[in-house]
Length: 211
Image (cartoon, rainbow, N blue to C red; front, side, top):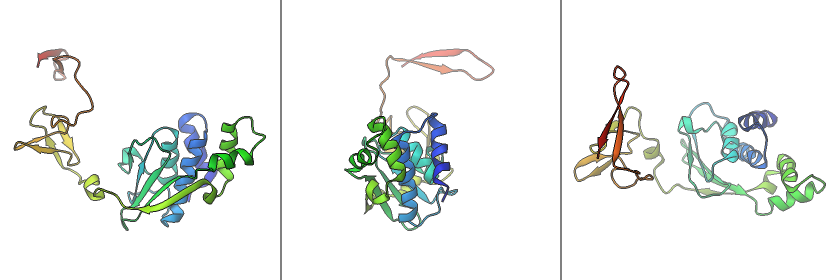
């Protein structure tokens, strides 16, 4: 396991400061190494982490576990909670960890002379035991991890918009292979009926197409 101070320095470097949630993320990542008996931060893709909020907490998790969005071993489940579920892809064992409901009060009492509650939590979260900081339980995923991971080299082009689809995220609709956006699962709405298409590199202008 990497040195605790070294991990704190790594996550602090990503934000030019250190905050309580970064410390929680690092401590949580170190805790799961013990609970799942894993060597972390990992250099391969054995552990998969599902974080329930973004921000500083996520980077603390990443530096401690080696799970990153860019490695496809970190996924955001946006529930607005400082919590995470860790899954060992070899054993399929999953553990969800979240802060102890009384962790803040415990931190404030330990460092009652701190400049603020924020500073008390920053210091206390670095020295409190795992039992004081966290709750955990074993869990199972409600979806297939192997399907989520997918297979390398699988790609399709959407029959409607023409955009490339990776990681087997295509949908079969009325006999056509389409992306989730064109299947109706879109998170954005076009503001007009004009599509601006860049031309090829030897034609640096753009063209306007009415939809």
